Length: 187
Image (cartoon, rainbow, N blue to C red; front, side, top):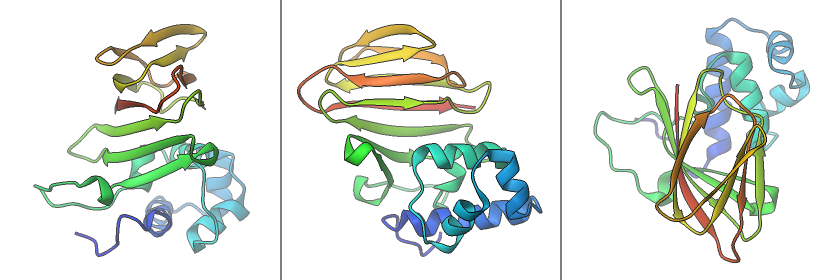
C-alpha cells in the first residue's frame, strides 16, 4: 500500500498521471492532442502546480484510454476497510458538487463507486464517461433529477436508474437540503 495520505489527492493524481503517461510512452504534446487539454495544464498537474477539475481529469483519462479513477487510485491491499475520511474527494462548482471515490476500477474490478452529494438546487453536468460504460445510480437522500440525452427522470430516496454512461448527463438537486446518491460506473 502506498504511503500517500488520501487527503493529498493532487499528489496521487500527479504521480498516477506521470506513471500512466510514461507507461504509454506519450509525450506531453501527444497526450495533449489525445485529450484536448493543453500541454501546460498537463505539465502543471504533473508538477503539482494545478488543482484539476473533474472535467479535466475525465478528458485526460480519455486521452490515456484509462478509467477516470485510475488517476485517483490509491493502491490498496486485497482486503481493506475504507473510512469516509480516507477516500479521494473531488469538489466542483464552489463545493456544490462533491464526489467521494470509494472504489476505483482496476484489472480485477471493472467499476468505480462514488458517493455524490449535491447542495440544494445545485446542478452538475458531465460530458459522459468512457464509451460503452453503464452508470447505475441509487438515491439515498433528497430528490434528484437525472437528465440523459434530453430525457429527464426524477428520483426519490430508494429510487434507482441505470443508463449509458458514455452519454452526456446532468444531475440536479430538486430539494432545499443536500441530496446524496451512489453512482456505480461499470466499464
